[in-house]
Image (cartoon, rainbow, N blue to C red):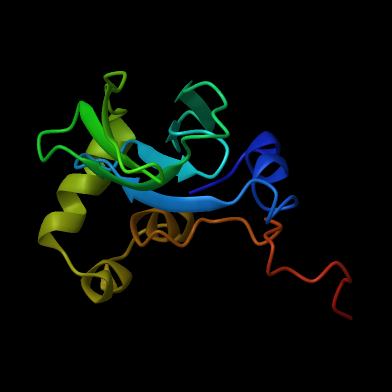
Length: 146
């Protein structure tokens, strides 16, 4: 999964000011629900590398936890003020690439995929090892290793 520059500038570089309270993938694995301390909810789609839905900034009622309905389409958000809110999330049509990986991963283990005579890039994609090494997070060192 790759993160866009706007994603990590919003979250990881300003950690503490815009803290993530909870993260959950949708049942289909195509969306990521993010509850934060300054917005109730944001929905991010890794395939599109963008946030596709977000609620307005609410300082008094920030997100604490989140959970997708088992069929997807609705996210329940628990807030620090004791309420539970339900949000309808945009529907997503998976790419053929995502469908192939999902179907294969439900029936074949990582070790079995690694043993297949596949090109290196396809093997990395199928084993979820295609994440770039240059992603900066709050845990990343600002100095380059020599």
